[in-house]
Length: 113
Image (spheres, rainbow, N blue to C red):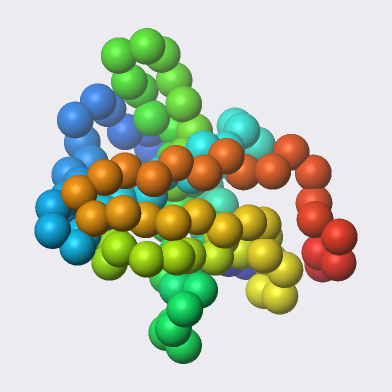
């Protein structure tokens, strides 16, 4: 997770555009309310590329309220979701033309800061 915190307002249904198709997919990381405003970092697992991050936001959807970070335009491939600067929270594969979903762990992985 990225160290700084945002005070972003809630988003409404339809306020996020996902770029899906070909080799482009998206990732949604579902979290609890306690992570609202925090940034979660991800990186390609098979390439040495810089990490990217997205803030967890409260999102009002048809069925209620969820808290999640959205990565709308990712190249297809394997990704690492980072708990902190050095500890992975897990791994996920993004497929072109699809939305991958990851559930944030309820407790910290072994070795977390």
